[in-house]
Length: 382
Picture 1 (cartoon, rainbow, N blue to C red):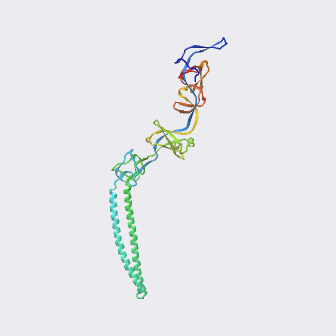
Picture 2 (cartoon, rainbow, N blue to C red):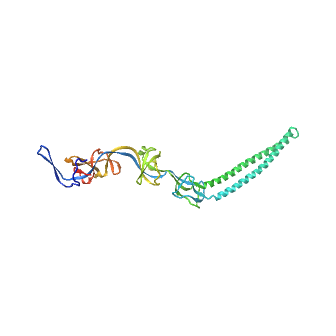
Picture 3 (tube, rainbow, N blue to C red):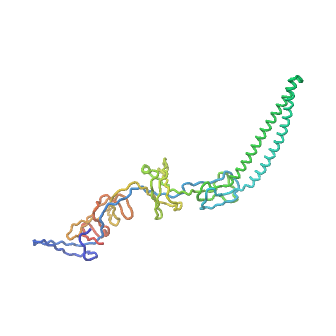
């Protein structure tokens, strides 16, 4: 800060005057002629805290995007959603025409009932034959034990009984096997009917609708593209920066003049070989930005202190940057400016840049640098 206050305002440019000073007890006067006193605005340098960070850009996208397709094919009966629509888990999206399948199921159920009826009739007949021959076999066993019939007659009755028993068993097993096959066939048709309704697996936004009513769609063909509610920003970081990032780190993201917070949720362990970068996934704390927003991502690492100089104080000449520093070299509070080359550290914020070779407490010219040169005498004004 200048030690003297002027009693008049304005710029004293080109006004030559003489300041006489006298020393008590001395007959010698000293005269200092000032060719031009120029007014400038100044500041006193001081250390500021600044953040060392990694800076990247990334687009906001859905954390997960799914192509939803049918497990069967057929003719599209109706589409119930449109692009950009919000849907809840379990909502019906698209339906296929199942008229033919429902007719087939009805016919196959009739066949199943007919099959059951036929086998029940056959089993009743086989059961009656089995009961009759069992009675005959038991009677012949008594007669054989009492010697009334021969061994051959008994063996004939036993053979007939065993044959009837086998026939009854085979008929029951055949009924069970055939009805099971028919039931499975009906179940497969019913599954096709169930699969003819495309349902939302999770809440989200409809990104695109890839089919329409009356269109034939095949098994596995995408019908709806769904994006999840949760959004992320993916950035590709260098190998060196990859070593400095870990999951859970706080992140600041800026877009359209708004800054929000987030955190690192995932870091790919393998690099993208085409870009030679590692993908880092960042989850914002809010979902207020639309998908596709380009955001500036700042990952803070550590805090430091340094001297920041405003751009208005810097003069460039032949690729060299320098500033003017005020020195109290003149009597009565006037200052002489000297030129000092500066080394910029690269960190910038707002209208300032970090420099490495300027000490705290230095008075420098912050406005008016274009009107002065080294060794000019200046006066600081508000």
